[in-house]
Length: 124
Image 1 (cartoon, rainbow, N blue to C red):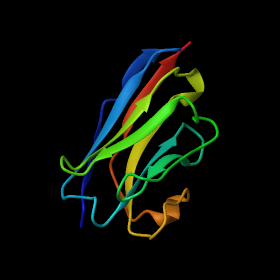
Image 2 (image 1 turned 90 degrees about the vertical axis):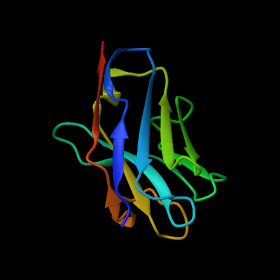
Image 3 (image 1 turned 60 degrees about the horizontal axis):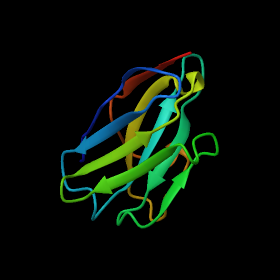
Image 4 (image 1 turned 120 degrees about the vertical axis):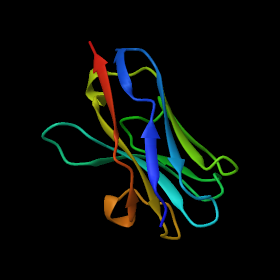
């Protein structure tokens, strides 16, 4: 089974940018759609973005649309999330996830493999 490791989190001021990266233990392109989720303290895990196996299809939560960009490099086994114009409400632990479901999904239950998460803190 694929193992996922996130990196790139940290502390940033509102309006700033961060780039998260997810490294997979095996080449994800042929098997997995990939997604990013986040969970803030006291809140449920929520969908952020997803990308299809080929990278040709993407999806975003309304709250991040126009500010975040998901991408993948199947040759390097990585999936990135470029986050711009960050807001304090973006503060959360961000998780990378892999799904074998045919179409990209925004529900956490569709993803069978998860990383351990990386903390993103946006100060006001």
